[in-house]
Length: 244
Image (cartoon, rainbow, N blue to C red; front, side):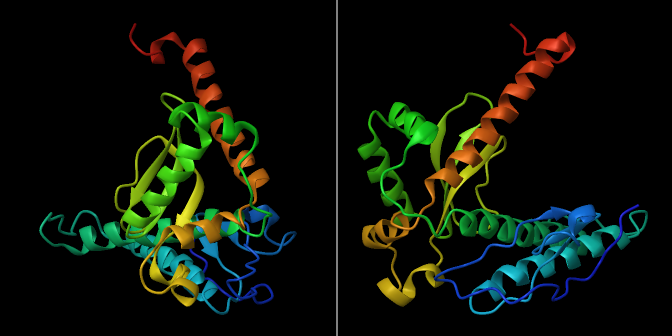
């Protein structure tokens, strides 16, 4: 049964944004063993944050609140109206809060590296998809200038492609069956301190000087494994295989 556990300060404070220590989501059974975020029956419990990490914790808190409300609705009585209804409002804002948490989780995860050129499998796919690694770099930096919220470099589980996706908010333009492996936060708070209020190629270049490409490649390896697993399941169960 779904249980809600209010978020609380269960770990030491996170450091400032410049050197974030990303809390890692864990299963409830591991919550006491590992520091960071624990998930119990769908609830996130963030550490006590400071600086801009407070925003990250705020998303986790609001995702919990929305999920609790959605669980408590009397669906035999509540109105479902596409113009406005409480159900619609909470459902939509739940996706904003939840993806705000997930987007920052990915973003903090691959910061703190040595930067430089991408390598490994990520470099192979980017070079193949964009006809050169330099062209991918140009494309993703321009995407960061065009986006209003995020750029997600995502792996498509259907065709195995690696493309840059623009998201104007935490939850706007998210694509089905796309697994983000690299996230660029282009909300003003991510760069205004050093580069002013407008995203530029310079701010994107600074971001790439701090990327941990090993972490990015681990994310990609998990996505490719998920695709192989799905293909294998379809092969083993012909009724679920795509029509030829």
